Length: 49
View 1 (cartoon, rainbow, N blue to C red):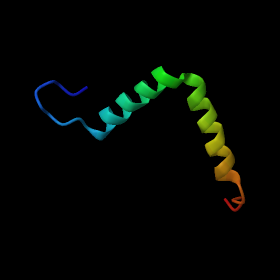
View 2: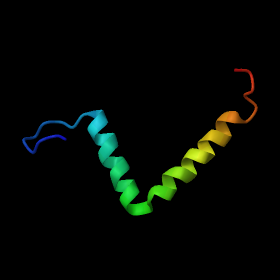
View 3: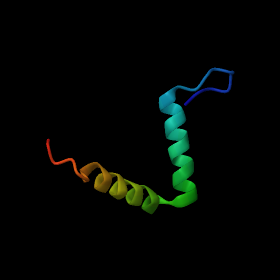
View 4: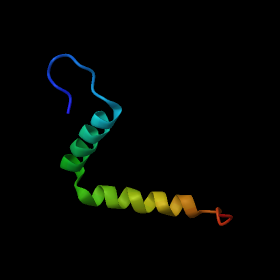
C-alpha cells in the first residue's frame, strides 16, 4: 500500500482499500448480491454472443 510520505495512492490501491471498507461495513453477502444482480442485468436481452 502507499506509504505515509505524501505519495499518491495508485488506482489499484484505492480500489482495494475501498473494497475492504465496504466489506467491513456490509459483509461478504453484499458483494455476492451485487454480483448476482450484475450477472442478471448483463444477460437481459443480450443472447447474441
